[in-house]
Amino acid sequence: MIMTTASTFRSALILALPLLVLTGCATRQPPLYGWGSYQQEVYQYFKADGSKSNEEQILALEETAQKSRAKGETLPPGYHAHLGLLYANAGKEDLVVQEFETEKTLFPESAPYMDFLLRKFKK
Image 1 (tube, rainbow, N blue to C red):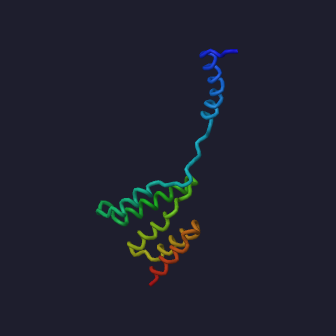
Image 2: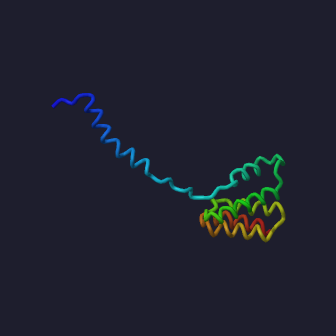
Image 3: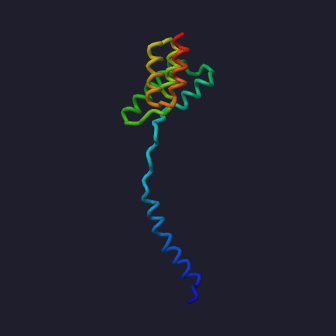
C-alpha cells in the first residue's frame, strides 16, 4: 500500500494532536522563591551611586519579606544575609546577628560563611 502525501500528513496530524493537547493542559510550576525586589536592591547596593540610602534598601527588603510571607513564598538564598549586611551598615547589631542566624538556619550550606561573618562582626 502506497501512502499519499495527504494521508501521511493526516497520520502525522493524528499522532501530534494528542501531544499538543496535553502540552496545552500542563500547569506552570510556581517559582521556588519569592524574589520581590531583592535583585534590584542588591544591584542598587553594589551600584553604590547614592540613589538609594541604606535605610531605603532595608525598608524595601523588609516590605518584600512581608509580602512574600503573606503569599506563602520562601525568600531566596542570600536574602537574609544581604539584609544583615544592610543592618550592619546601619549599626543595628542585634538585627545583623538575627538575619545571619536566619540565613544559616534556612540554608545550612551557608553556615560556614555566616559563621565567618558573625565572627568578623562580633570583633
